[in-house]
Image (cartoon, rainbow, N blue to C red):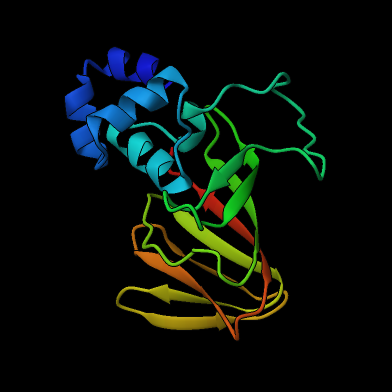
Length: 176
């Protein structure tokens, strides 16, 4: 899907890689299906291509109703590090402004990279504790059933609290 969108936009591999802040060889691996991009890389590519992250994924079989069972959902690592927490995409489809990703974060997993996008971001803590750090705002500590939302253009990163696991839902509403 990345290759098709890149070619449609008239970008060279070199230009898209530069805009997305990744290497051209890594972009080539993504386009050939040899490597899967992390969530951060997916968002960078989407921004560089002027599409939503869901537009970079294959379309679901049904355009109307999608059920994601507990053992299903596209796995998206938070970052490119080997110790990165892995999210499960519950809703991320082409032409949809809504993205919902579930994280079961264990102590020792990397979740602390800075992230920004477009639209509005919401973070809901199902269980455990999470600290959301927002540039220019500060740190917000969230416990079970707490929720915070903010413009996705504010850079944010997460921290586990007291080295305990957390179950978190990330919701991003992209502008259309």
